[in-house]
Length: 139
Image (cartoon, rainbow, N blue to C red; front, side):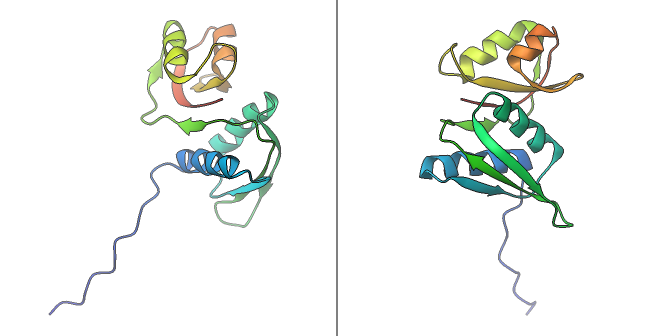
């Protein structure tokens, strides 16, 4: 008989989704810091925006000569952060609709877009009057 097949392994669909989910879980457990791996440019940009709005503390990129890691210090501000897949196209006029669907309130929280001007939150995209593709959200 043919040799038995190895057990199937999970494949990583989205590096960003993984990182944000890990971040959420660590925050929920009340961890002070969390290790995200693998790293990507998109994740780093996403974290920079979260940091700018005061949702996370410092974070540090660790180069391990592979995909890299990021160590993030948490400050207990994140309620939820998720990636949106597929990355839907969003026109400037539709931003409001997505914000209403994803965020609990108009007072806080951000929807992240990737635009031709780079990765930014929905407020900055509105100021620059540009649409783009949705990456995820946090609040």
